[in-house]
Length: 340
Image (tube, rainbow, N blue to C red):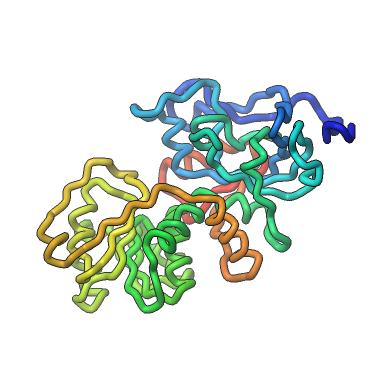
């Protein structure tokens, strides 16, 4: 290593999974790219695990309101080891195990507005480095930032959930949904979880969900939720689905209830029946994303044994497209991790 730069000798090429045109997961191809350099203020991280999110499905298919520069390497949740640092970065980062804060300091997200973690090495701004505590694996760390970080901010900073409250989680079997169930149970809430299959229902029960509603069998889930709540409604409803789920969610609410939202995977335009809003004095609370402290808190919960991230599938880099296909078909429970 040259002490003045913190650089080490390594291979000059790396394997990546890249997207060159929109379409299905089959457009994701294994390629060989030059290993990036750690520029001023940057660190070069050897990627050990990359968590996939539904964002990667959106990037693969393309979104009308987001231009994707091609080629693009997807993957927003990254954990690995710092191998090099550029000018202005403390050399004691070298060798440390890190999770990456997914948002670029100038705006945008890894894998969406810039290249992400489906690769063997990634150069990032030093401000994105978060040290992984002892006792937390790379796979666990890569499961946390976007899904668990988003849920942590939504439930605690914005939603202020507390013990004894009744909490409804829609889409409870995906990465964000599973983490919402786990956090709600962690603080002692009573959880009503909505999912689409018996197998996923069993897994949610194992996580501690008190009531399960299968919306494939009961499309108007509000009736089942109302019954499960003792006909009093829920104190907190977590709805990042949007679309036609919005009015049934309002029907589920108790007086002074709070609807929390961080997304709209089923549609951005949602109807509001204002009768429920004013008659039950419902608060609708948006939560944009996460901050570094949310990810640090999640890492701490794992290190302390209070939280075990749910990982459905781990795949090698050459099978990353299979992981995106699992997400696209909603055939997962929890997180998909790719190991370069």
